[in-house]
Image (cartoon, rainbow, N blue to C red; front, side, top):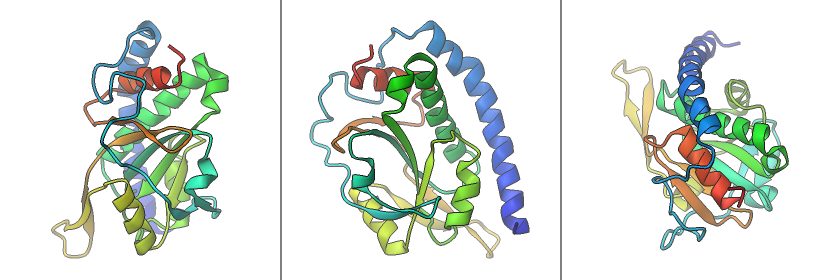
Length: 218
């Protein structure tokens, strides 16, 4: 393995582990104790799609398994989608841990429904996030998480369709860069309609409760 990638993955793993310990210690307790509580932020309170937001659209990308996928690959499933990059030091691992906790909550309490939800991680940094890099990175999270990458034009199209802001920022070393980007977890319905958008301030429990609501499990 490339030494640079190895060091980055180790760093990301440590950060992810910290986020997992905190999330499991607090968020998981909330899930178990407050399963009947409904979400009060992050998404619309009704069962209707979010009014006025045209989010989503066609894409043609490569999964970390090397399979070519499109938006139709996941037709019929709910989707939890997060856009980020593998070099992200903290925010992206934390948000993907939230997705992991939501999936584990579903698997524990509603195993059949869990099979109807597909978690997706779409890179905003395709130049560095190649298929091998994505494969190693997504293995740090939920086993059903699919990492999606592609060419720069392919990623630009999906960013446009999902209203994702992202740009390169020099990290000060003149040898590398980081990415400044918007951070939302999207819940898309089986027909690819936007059902929920969750901010970094939304907890795993709040996201979980909202997913239950939209799947009519609560």
